Amino acid sequence: MARSTRPALVLLVRHGQTGTTGQVLPGRARGLSLADSGVAQAEAVAERIGKIKRVAAVYASPMERARETAAPIAAAVGRGVAIDDGLNECDFGDWTGRKLSDLRRRKDWSEVQNHPSRFRFPGGESFAEMQLRMVEAVEGLGRSNRGKVVVAVSHADTIKAVVSHALGAHLDQFQRIVISPCSVSALLVAGAGPPIVLATNEVGGDLTRLAPM
Image 1: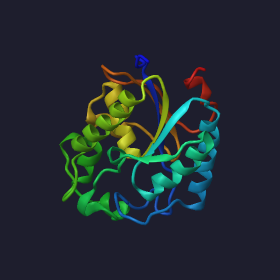
Image 2: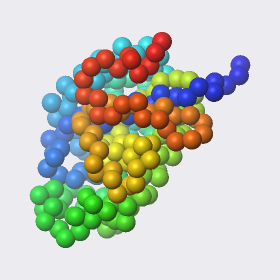
Image 3: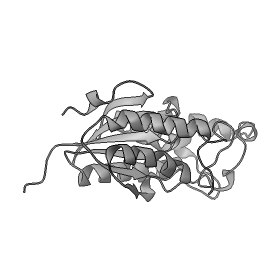
Image 4: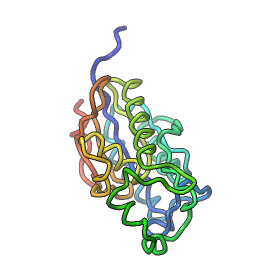
């Protein structure tokens, strides 16, 4: 059978809220699970995605909060969850687990917000490395799932970075994009050329319009 030349529809889902969302930079610290509100958000987005009848696969970052968000989605579409390290949170290095209120008082916080393309987290990744990793992961999912719908559960900064790339925006502008907990951003990913952005930060409404039958 000839391989499809149609693009893949990749639904990027941010994980649900945790007990530290908006307070701490959790990064890749282990043991952080969804709060009750995050569980409810995951169940709600699973119900919305479950109405799409052609979901072929569900992928998730290795972080617990992403896997816990992916689980009800996978159940709703009758699939398992495949872990993809490329979808992992940015490695914040020495900043992992720090309170955001403390980080905002640092002199280099303005660089994180206004010139992230030249910032590297001490002991961790640069934003540029994170964006490249995430773009390669999403484009890889597109190549291996041509003509199909797939879900990729990841994190706010990683999703912002790949959406920024797809829009053709400079990385220094990616902080202007909002990605809310359990929101859905949709990209058409073809074998060649940048992804096409169909939707960003969808927090409600019918998603079936993104995946015509």
